[in-house]
Figure (spheres, each protein chain N blue to C red):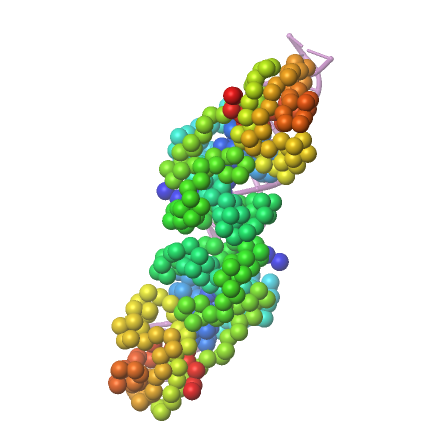
Length: 219
Length: 219
DNA sequence: TTATTTTGTTAGATGACACTAACAATATAC
DNA sequence: GTATATTGTTAGTGTCATCTAACAAAATAA
């Protein structure tokens, strides 16, 4: 079964929003895709009838297993493309996203399998995001959200969920990178922000918005 | 100005048909694209209003200079992609066409310029077809059609126009390849077929259909 | 608990690109 | 030079993915 470029984009968006926020509703999806809500509703009905999405009026959206697989395969194609553009074609990381958004819709399993092979079957992309295998299986080590950890935890930064330029810049400004080992010194009940220490930083504050998007391994 | 995938395909088809046959009409295009004539007529009107095609009812179709450039840039992207897939990714020539048909519509000048660079700025693809430069200029050496040559001419096979599998197989069966040097021994007035000799072949007959699609340099 | 805001749905329209059916022009054959 | 075949156009539909306007449900605030 093939799916239109449009359908693929909706499925991918649902997957990525549900990784970021847990719940996904029509409004989120609408904003994320810059597509008006009625259009989203209509597409959800269509994807529901194709058994890719569980949709009931006024209920949050969920991918079916089938939908999850399709979405994961698109993500696979996207991440392999980004890797390929950087590693094999000499592009900078900031340049590759828009190209990968287009190439991820190319229909040719062999094309992406070849990239995979040439790249040596990578498991994670440079943001720490997992690359699904050719069956759509994410070897997603179910990392914890930093925001779900508690005072005293020592954790290793293993992945970031959002890869917007602004977010990466913020991490950079604070000297945070994949592999950083943080100790949680305090969690503010008021705004969900965390005070952490790592390396030369004895006391840095990270807002809840940031902590929500950081994935860690508790050590 | 960007053009839809659909528009690009029409423009490319007109360019390729006019290289093959000289004249292009709605019926040819319709067959070539497997799209019904009324749809083609409608698109011609649209492309005319965008000044990409010269269209007048019942007249043959012609690309404007602008249309020619757009079409040539699509061809450039197609041929570079084919080269890249073969040279840099290890695909066989028979596998690459369908993938290239999709990738040729990717919108990213840098992506294709990078391929061009990695390939060492090739001028011809392995079929002998010229690769337009980044401005859409074909360094088309205006090769002669084999079918326009006359008895006694000695010519070098420099390019083939049609790249269907059946056509390439025929050339292969006859031991013809790029660079073959042919001597024209006779031209049959009746059916336009030619009797030629080359290498170990002292007398081979090529039908007009074949001769029309072979480009040569007279030496 | 009622009022207001936010979120979601239905209904109806639009543009792009395809189709079929019917008719018109051009080209070819007799 | 009329008849026939081929080619091309017009008119009217359909589907996909989008929109706006209007209304409805759910969540939040007063």
